[in-house]
Image (tube, rainbow, N blue to C red; front, side):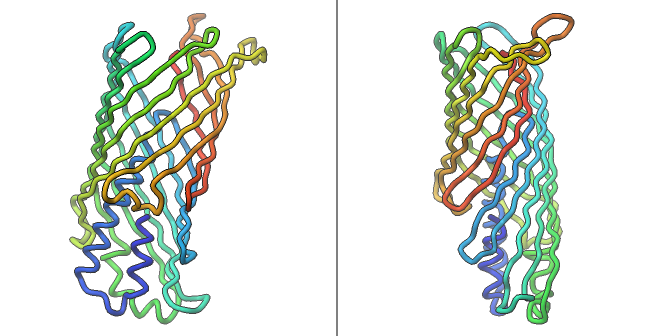
Length: 308
């Protein structure tokens, strides 16, 4: 997390050099690159989770993502979609600076952005599809910090405008390559998906050169989306059960940036048919999942649309 870099920095703040600031800012860029990967879910998503640090300065994150997709081309064997996305993220942390219960920094990072994406799907065999994607967007990042304690305020001028209390914009570009395998249970289609993502985050128009960064991150995702028809009805429509399982695996030289390299998720949900003027228009899904890793615990709530 960005704040993990801050914690390491603050502990040696009185002896800090400008090069230390630049190094920490570069680490922030890698942190943001990895966090961008966590928001690639294709549905309307709200997530809240905590990354635990050994020094007790845990990081709390909240993410809200709203995508909208429209078909540019569609046929039985291929599909091309345009994706519009709005996203908001807030990270907060209480950083212990010096011994004493009243010495510390209350820091909050907020990110607001939007982007466009092209998603392609090509049928390779009866149940196998190739699914590449390209996304690009712009975000605005801000940090706000409040200093508490006599000793902490002595280093305020050193931190302000460098590691803390700054703003910047950033471009986010991601490339994805994937395979999807599906099968049917009665009239519903379940799937297994494997994707590889590469994302690059580059800052521009920074409030200070100390927070300039240009970083990349890589991730493999494995997802199982299992749908089981039931005998339960709601508003005269059949309610289907959904089981969700997944894993995210970071790779590359900076794969342990967030303190873990593999995370897991599992949950369940339900789907109802969506109709327009009597014509079936896919299904609406509501689901919840728990997220965990070595030092991560959280949850994910998704309201989405399944065209099948």
